[in-house]
Image (tube, rainbow, N blue to C red; front, side, top):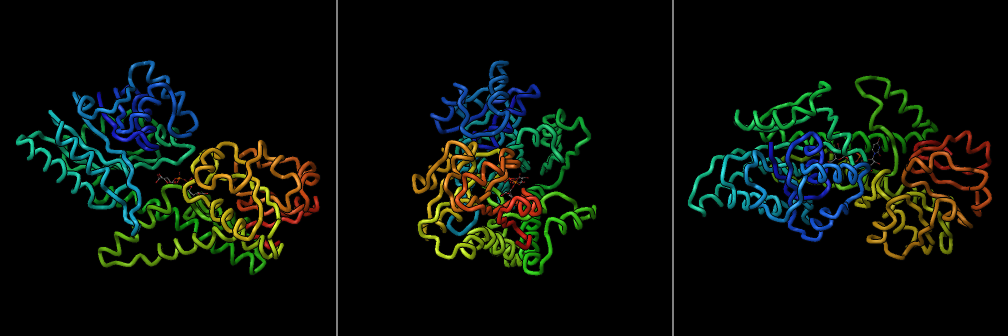
Length: 438
Ligand code: UGA
């Protein structure tokens, strides 16, 4: 079986590589020549655990190719996946220009039946636009080639993307013909061995499923952050409340960890886009508007705690552990660290950060306005407080005796609740967490 994947960003590259891993002949295409050259030389455009090795293995086996030419790559393909970016436009709606440009090109060059699958996260109704773009391109050529469009949203988490792809909770496919369904079923068969379901549905429902899933998860987080803030006021401990409610299987233990707001390339963008789509169709998404509002202010929670502890921040020095929006990624998009850094610098404070992976990427966002340490302990030398921003595993059990010596004040602001309040007070640290009275 042969397929092409257009777009070698996060989704495209992981998807293409995982399909190759199960024996499918895959060509990944990108218009960015430097990216393709890099990939042909084993250089990954993104950091994702396990990806580099898997790419190398499949390139060596001849199952994975990289190319800049869609035209050459379409030959003998049964499906082409569109996995290009959909950046948010100024009004928050997803910009479809790259998706539709690929659809037009597919229409221009396809020679045999193809399933044209949208993998990028696109608003409900996009498949229809993709269909139209292909039709227009075929009309311009003055020919007809049979094809079907399909929607196949992805549910990958950064940092765990390969595992998510190889062992999916479910695969959702929107198709509207038996021929397309048969091809998609055959393509995904190797991933269904552990009993994970493939759920076929109409195309608009598949498109909506993706947004509804991310919006639901974002809602859980904002809800818990709201509860956490109230716990603090009322003298309750959100860590206990979380366990208490999570044991109800209807609620579940997952995705109810309070913190300093969700970030990344997905939740903020998708929540905004769904609000926008609904608005354009005359329906206000009231819950999601509140989810966004809570998330926005949650990113300032740590800063507010710092401010009320220290008062004047001018000349104060803060050690920051973690910069990326979550562990196991170098992704800095919408990272809470950026909001906190900005607020601290505005007050004349100094930030010395350490992140195991994201420091190079962070420089693209904040440059040299902050200092970067070579390791976690170096960041703490003479700092007025330690700020735990991203819960990387290496921060989970530091040597607190060493920390006590390095820090100017024994103060920790934990944005992820990874330390125990009792243990911290036994060691005489002033410890601030989220949703726990200090
Ligand atoms: C998210 C979804 O989890 C994926 O299923 C989806 O495919 C993906 O978006 C996408 O649309 O592409 P991702 O953005 O990689 O994946 O990251 P998550 O692990 O979901 O974390 C998102 C944010 O929520 C992070 O900022 C994290 O710190 C925060 N979070 C997560 C919490 O604050 N509390 C939690 O309990 C869980």
